[in-house]
Image (cartoon, rainbow, N blue to C red; front, side):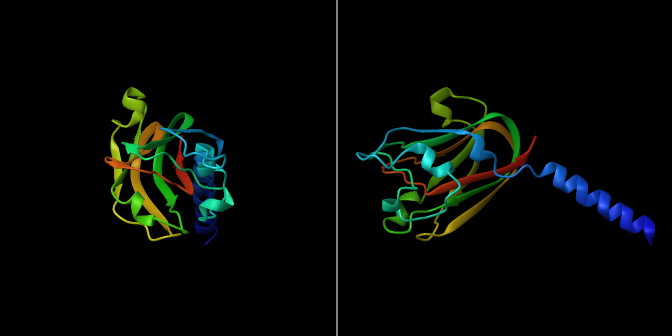
Length: 162
């Protein structure tokens, strides 16, 4: 019985050691353009605030353009297991439909040609989508819309290990 307890405690400690929290919180965000106001900054998507009302100042927003994109630089390469995205709640949730999550180490084409983790088929207004990236390795996490449209993210979280 004591052996089992020690084994379980050791397993719990190793799981905690691998869990380094939301990697995006310490990253640097950028986007293809900024919508014409002062509260549409790329960094809003990694501020730790899941508020989905754009006018409360915690969401990003690009101009309408072909291949709008948003990117977080995690500052070094990680093994990425999960990406969580909070969609805008007060308007236009369909704008995120069809967006691609891409992960890798290249900035060629602004990182939009890195390997694809997932396609966002739909996230309801104000809701959260969770995407499994199965340990893909990369420094950059991009969200790109492969069409002409606005791109808005209210939060993006990245979970993984070194």
